[in-house]
Image (cartoon, rainbow, N blue to C red):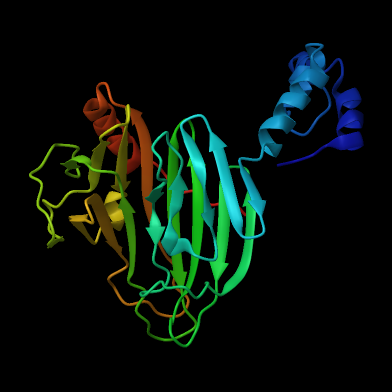
Length: 293
């Protein structure tokens, strides 16, 4: 982008009277960088300060509240918290049910357990909560996890893995468990498929999404893996809880390569939830991955 600054003003005066279209342009948009920023238009319309406040508010809005290592998200249809030292505990969704619901448990370590993760860095920015974990002798990759709130009622988990080794195995699992109720599996093209429990499903006909209908709630929960990241899914009932476990990164990983995968959970009104789930799955499949810096 070219910024004319004072040189632009001189150039404008030199051109004045020679090129009326150029003069009209500068009279309309002001002497700003070309193309003029949005606040240039706002200044000429007499609402400069109001527009700047609106823009700043959208950039500065904080969705996550981080206290020590526990991050809290509070939105109308998605309220809960996650401890970034124990990502395998999941995001604890708060509902009117007595027990919290554990969503998007990410097993950065195969065994999980009571020993906290080796946290290298963490921050929250806008809709994103980001945690980076160390590569260790027991785990030959360095995981990074984004928890991203997606308006109006979704939480997306973006998992990255990289290594300093010439060869490593980054295989990772994500899991969600919902209160007892119905499970409706959906294919990559958003069609309802047969529910198969317990075994790993890895072929083209395997579900890419699961619609959960927990008893006692007026909301349904859709969980889906991005089609390009799918490696396998296992649907089961564990201790009475319908559970989906997603397998990511089956291929080996070498130094200099970053592998990423996305899983998104969406809260939906129970009425017409299937149609809404099918639409959400198609939209997710065509969505681009963006990362904050």
